Length: 68
Image 1 (cartoon, helix red, strand yellow):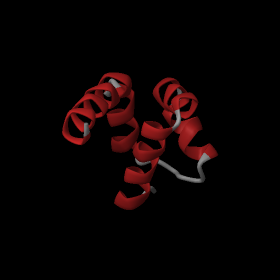
Image 2 (tube, rainbow, N blue to C red):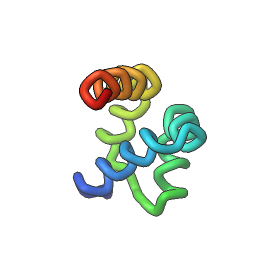
Image 3 (spheres, rainbow, N blue to C red):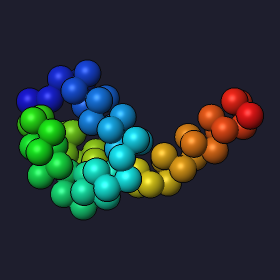
């Protein structure tokens, strides 16, 4: 079972790595396992229903506006 910290790190990796984000979106269990993390059923459902690409694009836009 992934701890809160591990889950956050998994999402953070998706922010930094486009290829990993694609895999996490299409196969959350496989991508997490590849990262050495076992998801809970709740975490798996959350990732399956999340639109990570849109979320990350939104965050990138907001950060860019603040920093630049």
